[in-house]
Image 1: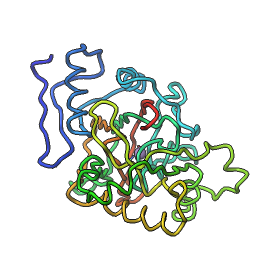
Image 2: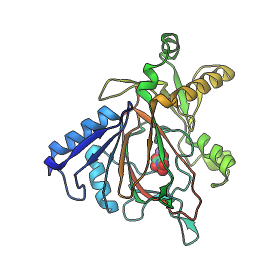
Image 3: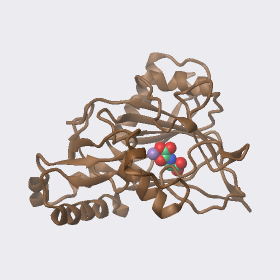
Image 4: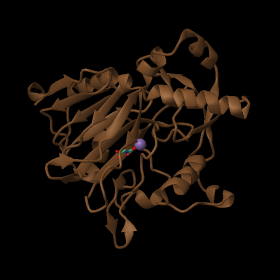
Length: 291
Ligand code: OGA
Ligand code: MN
């Protein structure tokens, strides 16, 4: 099977497409090593034409490490709690999964002490109409973004940490989009507390320095005056999404999109209405404590 596998990089700094493999059956270590290498080189890759059951997705995802069970339990798949549904579809009057995932630029589970190393998102249904597809996912290369900072800015950021908050994100989304209830301070306590991570982190495999603050979760630089912190974060949020560092993923049914949460941040586009169904299944893999 290995001789049919092909990898095609995009023209930009991140992104690649892989064809000619079938992940519904176990693949050998050599093929897996090529996939891992491509992910390390390109930060986000798509493997086309994968029609996977939740268990098959989980089994392949486990090759990257320990799977995480998301704190948003209502979106986890019943039989395989490590599989999380991302969908706008309603079932029995309730959302099938998380229907407002990825509204803001973010890195998955950065609010945990051990954020996600890798995310695997498999499309079962893609919104489409009149030959057009909708709901692209955008990616920003965090290593290219770091490299492009001025030397002065790199010095300024050296050693700084910032707070990444699930609770902060929850109410920001609740207020802005009304798709989830606004929670009181007390209700928020059931979700994880802020995680403090370096603003610039080193990729554990490639050694690249990556900018690790995101608009969705990062809300305070540790030990810095609030107005200075807000201004610096706003500048960094703006910088990281410069078009020069972007890859835009246009979905096909059966895509397995895999990204590295240290090397990219990402965002969903909500450019379709609820009459168009979008159904995705997702696994995230636990990473190490950022340094
Ligand atoms: C995610 C996510 C974006 C999208 O699943 O982690 O951010 O386009 N998804 O669905
Ligand atoms: Mn995400």
